[in-house]
Image (cartoon, rainbow, N blue to C red; front, side, top):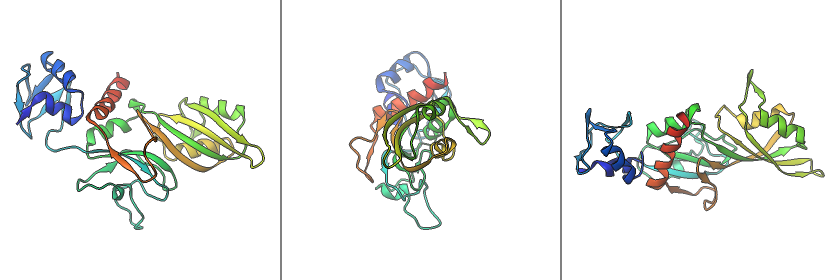
Length: 242
């Protein structure tokens, strides 16, 4: 058995200090009963509810940040025997990717066995930012940038406003580099946004996801998230939904 505030922190809901504050305020229930004593201990299987959210205390969670290479699929298995993102992580735990990156797209992707957090991160209401570097076949103009920022029509629906920066233009090769930050998660969204302005994507890399960036991770490398980072992700989801 472990102290309640430690369990809440280890699950990643918030820091231990914040958990203690919530316990004292009566925001934490164990098996349906309000608990206010900081010395309370709980065991695996006890139902812990924090601010109305039920936490899964039945297993240990794992969280990974991977710099996905190209030609790797964002699935647990693949019928064509292509490499999967889960095959790149050294763990015996059944983890799965949070969202997806296309087969030919590289960059940051989270993997976990925490279904609650994964669903929260992918829910449109959480508005988690995803930043991409896009190599475009064609000259991107200021008008194109403005159009992308304000939203373009995909499948009859306009995309949300987003951040777009024109990083460089090579007039000789007729190519451009864009930085695009979106919070939606439509299928092939960035590629289809570029197609909407009459151009195509040569290469696409996700360089940022929520609080994370690609620095320090070479292609194919990964690392575990810290408890603090997991707590921040939970907090981002809760704050966006308010």
